[in-house]
Image (tube, rainbow over all chains, first blue to last red):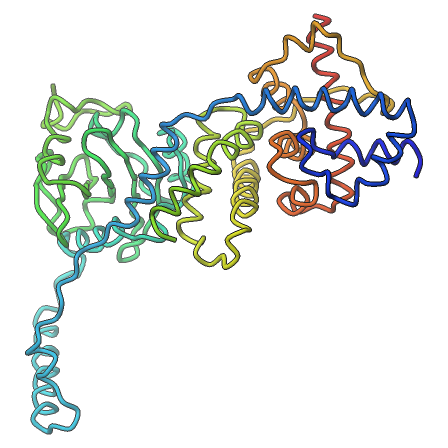
Length: 277
Length: 166
């Protein structure tokens, strides 16, 4: 092994001694012991490396970041409580019973008629949309597509992914706490989801979509509080956009979040009236 | 993975991951996002990793891929050209220059390097991984990692020497 080869190998030898047992370094280390010039070079190299290692390890990572990461995991674990099917329902249908089959056929006929009668109406009701978005809010696998905490970057990302990105936010949702976003599809329409971990209100998810898609879009500039799948929700419309917030804490926290004094202008657009100070 | 073990994983790795991310991303906010996104991916897919001893490498690999993906998409990390040294001889740093080296100046110097050198060097100095692990994380051959660490160190020294001479 030449001195140059030994130098190249020894450059990858960590100063903390973690590689002492690695046979890859044995030959180069032995040569450094025999060759005074190489030995001096290696000692100096290790001193410099140890200094850089100490300094790089002194760079602090904020505890806030750790808390955010742990919040992300916790929010993924929250799920809608599913009520067990009533026992009578399980026993109602028997594959061996002609009566059961007759009942099933009757139900199919009745459902078909019901669908026929209601055909002109659109299926894109806001209540169905809310239920679907609540499911997305408690999704424990792919909760967000991307973790970004900067609103400008989120707006750009949503735009790049054909998500709705022209929205007006309550101040409480425009003052940090942003954790990531996602673009979902609902009846062929793109829906933007913004995920927050807020100090006072905990985890909330905001869903933004075009209001004109819903025949029963929520009231303009007047948040409507409700519950869907056991989760508190608030919805309103403004300037052609339908907003839905799903809270993961108590309903009172969601109301507090949307109190008028906690809201203000975001971006270059008018406040909804209930947002005015 | 249960909540406790996820918390253990975060406790064990979020700091070195953040430092690696900071060396790559050049801003604290972007570094924080990269780390969050990495753990996000772990929460979604980490259960598929059967060998828990590979968790650390998986996290660093995922963070690096995430960084490369964002960089390609946003093209927001312009290269900073540094004049390459002509030969591989050890460049001497004066004791006074060495004394001035601190965490911020190391990060700032690393961030000036081309990503080709920055990533392996940051991983090397974090001391969390052997050169073989680094090759696996960065998905490049072992020989490439060794030569990039060697060249990267020389460039790093050059930066400190340049700073002292100003």
